[in-house]
Image (cartoon, rainbow, N blue to C red; front, top):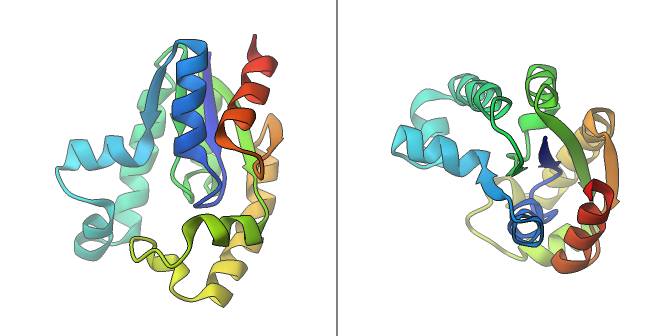
Length: 162
């Protein structure tokens, strides 16, 4: 069974996921990296060249292929689990864990990052966070406090799945 991490950008999905994979001796997969590797270009470029719908279809195919894998820790893109089809596909092969980090904590982690286009406007980012939070809650089999250190968060998740 896979452990699938979801949450808003900056909630720690990748950092916690890598730590959790190490602790549990599992393979780590990042859906965004998987898509970039398969497409040969960055996600930002996929959005620019092909549009969001095209990207979301790639993301869905990625989620379906992950459901066939066993015993992986999977970090999903911030928007992936806001789509029910992705939730349904990932659930076939795993359990979903929502890293519930406060918006203020996320802002501290991201800072003034230029690599996060959605965070250039904090008001819009807050609105998106509020919209997505309910969807993450509905998708989750488990909700974990995402405000802790990556190590502590990973240890808590590991305890659930041991």
